[in-house]
Length: 389
Image (cartoon, rainbow, N blue to C red; front, side, top):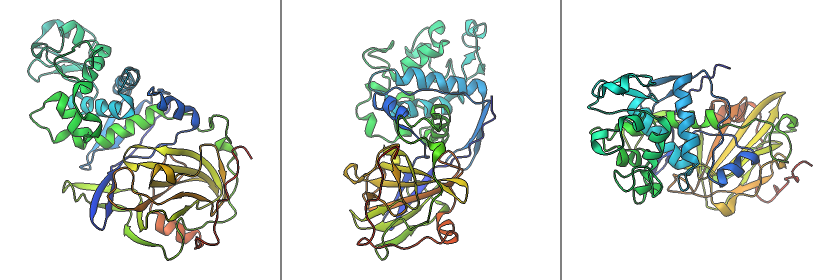
């Protein structure tokens, strides 16, 4: 299997009056979008290892066995009605924090030492991925040394093996609207509640790496390997309509006071301001994605090289393209909004050389180096083509 190293950090989006956290970007063709709409996530290849960065800047390297455990959480969890992608993310955060995705035995239960395990834990009598305790009613030793059982118990719900107590994620009122780290803590009830949030960017990296689709599978639209060379580069907003609110780079998260990384550039603009595709390309994602709110991702070929551009926080009614659709530079692809983790209308914009799976770079010098043209709203228009055209 290929060695996969992904260094992803939480993207900090700061408006003049607020600080927000966005999630790492994922490319998603229509085939995966259909799976996500039904709640089921599809695990593709499990890499040999993966390195991602916690929100406090600490790198975390996971091996193939740990990532296989993550695949179990994704597959079993997303197959449970009501869990969805957000629930799976919370499950990954919890297991990363509790066990670093290892099925841990415990000498407090000698029988567990003879069962398949990834190591020996020592936290009270806790067992497994989620460090569940038989004495707390989560299950028997035999049950808790089964990773599938642990996943089903963590998510709980009326069909969960632990219903009605201890409460799993589906039994926590309002978990969908809670911060993912807080939701994980609501199930785990740890004495160290703040640590879960630190693992959110790692969980996102794992989820992206294990569920990413084949890049050319656009579900009937234009294949991504046929992205044409662009004729020009334009700025993503009309001239004289925007103010740069936050630049690319590291900073202190104003919400947590901790180091964080902003993977894009924020441009404050009035609600409804047109958003332009910066180049000719093919849409690979158009719809909701975590903290990005409504997200559009377009794949381009620039000087013979693949580049992805990303546009975030539109309202649902402000997304004007679909997956697989071809667009031209200056196409009116969306309108500025404030969906997702945002408290004011703005465009969060990213450039990712190599494609959507690659790290973002500073978009400002990239646009300048490529001579991005300024357009005005009156002369630019909807120049998208039909998919496959």
